[in-house]
Length: 173
Image (cartoon, rainbow, N blue to C red):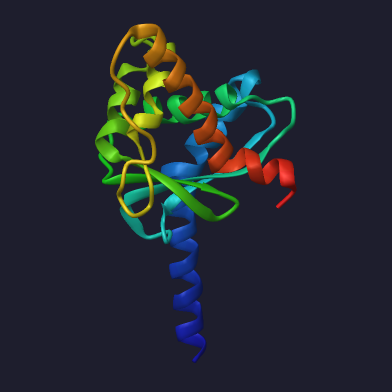
């Protein structure tokens, strides 16, 4: 019985260390390296801690002086740090509750374009690449005149952040 317990402890410790060094340390370093990210807390791990094809970006805290753009910046900086990796999807959670997902290819693309692509374009096109957990598109892809499309995309970006975590922060849930 003692041997089994030791093996179990070693196994769980190994899983924790793997998640920490493969993912959590990266997001912690990103938050620590940019003063604008201070006040945002993220738990970043593999799905169920063992599925390396799916990663979970779980917001734990966002201080009241932080904007949705600050949270988006952390996500984009993280995608840049992981641009050489391939994932099937990225789960976007708040306090352990999955809310949305991104396709792994889109996450990789944003990482490869970070610092090259216009950040306003990346942010305004983010919602049309967000999916509900059942795989359906969470926000529409807008077409038409630039000003009208831009306005709708920015409304969707605001709505996305509200549904992801802001509404629960405001309500204190």
